[in-house]
Amino acid sequence: MGFLLHKKNHCELCHQSFGKHEELVKHTKEEHHRPIIKCPNCGMQFLHEKDRLHHVQEEKKKKTDLRRHK
Image 1 (cartoon, rainbow, N blue to C red):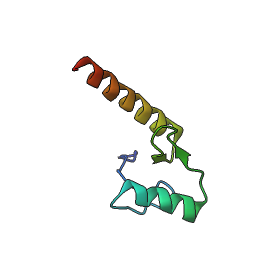
Image 2: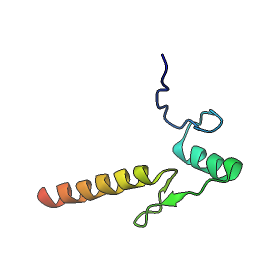
Image 3: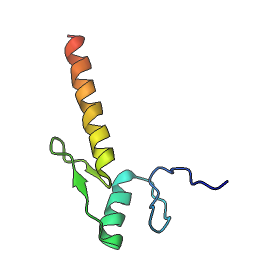
Image 4: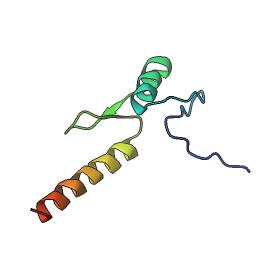
């Protein structure tokens, strides 16, 4: 095929798979000594800034939707 499909909870560095996102984050931090990026609002942890930004956008959208329906 020539390209890798993104697998959820799959380590990009050693190709191990994990049942939960939190396990992947812990593995990446401890085994590969990679920095972890935290959401300033809820503390959820991410491996990439783009994932944190997506999370923040989704959370903002949820809050906006909730206000509209009240």
